[in-house]
Length: 475
Image (cartoon, rainbow, N blue to C red; front, side, top):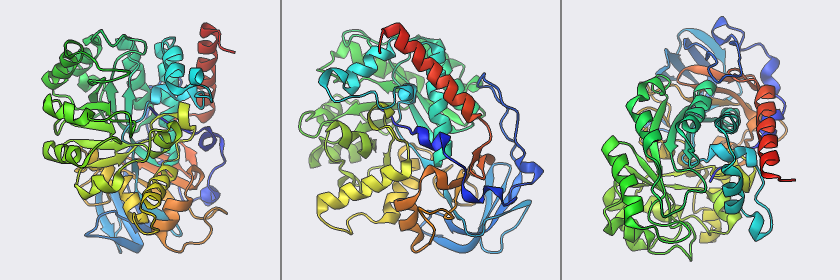
């Protein structure tokens, strides 16, 4: 599934956007276009100085009055007394790694809040009905909306879980939207909505992408994976259907991601069956995994698989509570996901991390079960580990790529800084995210997106939705 929020797009810029701190030629805005091939801001050399720096590296900790030096997309130094290149005044700001999102059906963001209050209007029939009417341009418009809002909200990595690949052109449209936004991402190529579970998905799109990936990867910012149906959907899927898909992903050397054990009391024993069928390993990400037993967690730990959980959608759809504490206790890599805007409406990742913390504390009946700092780790370094990119991003450390954000507390919803970790987790909204840097490129500054035109993005998404509604006779 997936989620995302329109208000972050339309809302005003952060209060400090007019201070002139970002007037350097390095930060100059670049031309825009509607093709998704917009030239991105150039990388350069700069130092964010005199900020409160949360490195999310336990060996480093936080630096009050700290600085981050970036050159050619790489973090050169972090600490006090650091300098180099252009200076960005971070006074009063909180600097931290960009958020890492681990499972998002970005292609259906234009169906935001379509999932209604009756069975026939629920998420699955809604997405299946409208998804079958989507053109490649509809996919592009929806994913571009998601990507732009992700950046606006402080996400620097997203996992575009594209289970509506109706043709190679549909997959290319999803990738083109990610490329144009400049975000770091994984595109997981899946099956088309409406495909019978008695039929294997066409492997031509993913094979073509894999063969020519260097021309799609946006200089390595985007990676390729497979969105796999697995052994179960509405019911069991036969081995002659699911096995060729899985085997092809392994043959192509691609990471595999699958929804499994989603409903806490209905989807039982699914992880055990994957394990016994040898369909789980370090290259497999398990999405949701709510209906897992202690023995199944041992299986996941043994195989090295990772988990992505989405508290917002899982609670909204009635799947149950995520088992974050149990997963962490087994040292299984785990990340947090947006999932689907058709169910949840909002893509504020900080809000979802807060919900993750609160749901764990509610289950434990303890105010202190999951700390604010640990919850933020789930959205940064833990999410990076779950996606296998912890060597590149997820924390602020020399040698890593410069994916970071600056948060301005100069707004009524923040205003005073007590404990920074608690404040960031419990109060941050997209409007507080002043600056976003991905791979050394400044994609948001002073509360304004630079690589995409938000007016154009919104207009394109609305036009695409109107066309789908017309074709499906939805009123």
